[in-house]
Length: 465
Image 1 (cartoon, one colour):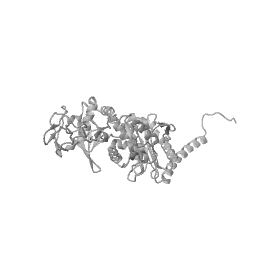
Image 2 (cartoon, rainbow, N blue to C red; image 1 turned 180 degrees about the vertical axis):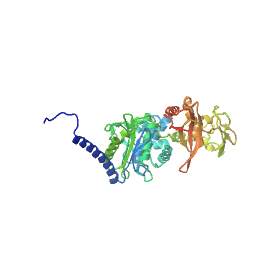
Image 3 (cartoon, helix red, strand yellow; image 1 turned 120 degrees about the vertical axis):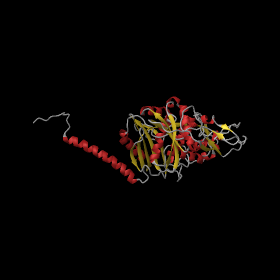
Image 4 (cartoon, rainbow, N blue to C red; image 1 turned 135 degrees about the vertical axis):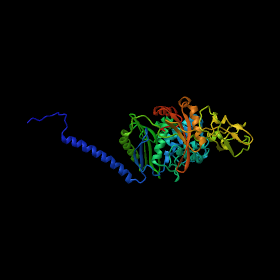
């Protein structure tokens, strides 16, 4: 009998061995994931396809957890918003107050009265996770850190983070500052979608300030394929947290691991989740996953009135706003009368700093007629046209929704010239919201194209009517 060697056909035993090995690896991963969850009551995790919002993995993703320094993701989101609006530049100096300097480590330790540029502040949060700098950013934007935390919470709600409450800008321990793994994944996706030109900061491996160099706490950068950020976090109460953004071979996911017992075990769990689920994400076209909420009505340094500025004259407490046909450039539609507080309507005075509420747009302000007791302004709503439509936001008032629509038309007039705008009220968890939409797109393709053009400034979702 002749023995055949070098055969390319695997024996039955070898095939069985390979299959058995694959099964064992699969069971091992599942067992590891289950053991992580069962052995650690703080653990929560989620993996979301960043292209379409589909949840690929979830464990206690809606259970309340402490965010720790993941909070700084929202602090940076708020700073990026102000930079996009032109209120802050990379060179803007951010002052360190006594309150900011008093923060517990980790921090840069800048003296009271010192300052750093906005770009340095970004690097300090991304790498060093500096608590003093986070508090200073909050004060620079909100006036005080506590007021800034209110704005952070409002912003969280506006982008769909329904269970998150912020109480400070840094993530230092506060029993009322809570979030969920799902909400953190939403924020991670929002950072990529809404501010792509600033998201690159999260790839920073090290940051030099003064004579010291600070390395990024995110150890997966450069070690796990496709990882391009974004943030770590730890307090004794929260455990070790991590939000990771991954883009690899046309697939994109955002993963969240919360409550790890150590930085090493947290990183191992995230690495396993990435390895298992990146291949299950879609390679198709990007969708708008997180709607961009209404811009924050805050920037304390802009709206502070000088000490010697003249006192504004008294005004009526309410104002009637009504429509007149064709006054908005012939867009047509069903127009109606609404009543707004006069605090929303700027008074034309010689005051050195004009306080302009973003609810009232420039186009509306130009149509305000002033009298001794009333002011009139034109607004527009209309019923949806047939075909495809897009939504660019859901806000607490009809006036704010109209503001969004007017701003979008001004931002991209060619994109929206053949469609009509309208608002639609909805009740969400006991809160009335007004959806700002454009309707009348002839096809899904044209609606998607419009969203693509608006995406740099607005959240956008294409819908079939």
